[in-house]
Length: 357
Image (cartoon, rainbow, N blue to C red):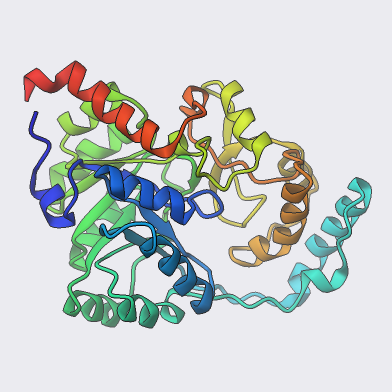
């Protein structure tokens, strides 16, 4: 069958399949494996320092000569005082003490928050040709600068209003993120309720009014879901959770193991870990924070506050206090290599629908 279309041609890939950028999960090895198999790997660098951003790009380049996307966080840092974080800081110290983790008060203050303007020069110097982003939209000057340097820009929308805004900003492609998707919601319109629309309801509504090519994200994990997305107008699909349990994933072993047991209602949306709504597997830390009755600081403050505790839990192999982002189709995860997962998607689709193309 012929996989090639305007989407694959623009991104210089063989198959219209993107590996979702998952910070803390998507390693340079995973990204390169997808690229080398003919898809588009996505390297997440949102919130990282310029130095670490360059290092991750170099690591990926050392493993593939194919194009890959670099994913940014396009949020604005909300005004928030250190005084307002004191209740949450004290509560996290209590939790750490209860669990026997060595968390000090000094670990929960004086954070540095990097935003995408800190990283743009690195992307230009490294000649990154595809830039995706979430949590908002890049500013007009940055959009012009990246486009002037030949970058293809991919934004994220969780509702029609956001998609229309991205189109107005002349973003090249839009990742349409349904409610099923694991990890952070890409929502950025602050004057509307949190969009909670499933992919297969959202995608055709956006396609009816938006002319920018759309990528389907959320619950895509086999030939059937890929076919449904294409029939509803997507030019490509973005797959995340299916890659979490792979050999190249940076997820800790107990996180990978828990994916197997997740049922359809086994994930939930929470602000507990980072201050932004995100979908993950429910665990003890999530419930402790949500039930504490303490105001959760906005992103990135809550993310910084909980980061050290979550890292200590990861080092101890403790999934009760670690982050386990996951989509609603997590239970179908299998322990294979990234290339095997990717090629299984391609081969299953060709076997099921190849003659229809």
